Image (cartoon, rainbow, N blue to C red; front, side, top):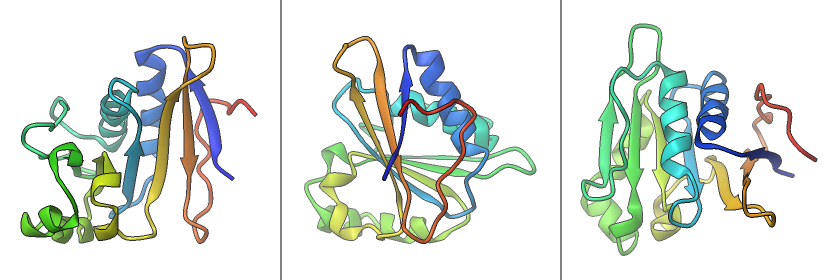
Length: 157
């Protein structure tokens, strides 16, 4: 069962990303699902901050991949946006699959476009707008062999 969190602002979404990142391991893969403007890049900015990434994070929509270095003691990050990829053949043609097996944490927006090329042990994150419309609902689902994370924000059950 996924852990469920609600955020009411970009700042809260980013802070949830910071809390999540502090518990990630080298080589973790995060799949971010959500409509346009659901907060995927905002959450990724928080993850980057929590990992110790030294550059500002922007959406890699047109470049598909942005790679970020981290300060000493942090973890580097690969930030993919698969929105413009047609399928896993495009993913493999670019050699992106090889980047998933490094020490960098990989965050993949729009993973549904290349899902057949991605490992099964990834952490799934689904971002949606709640029924009230003013809140984001963020569901974190971890692989069966991985303990759920304990983020600083209390999940709403």
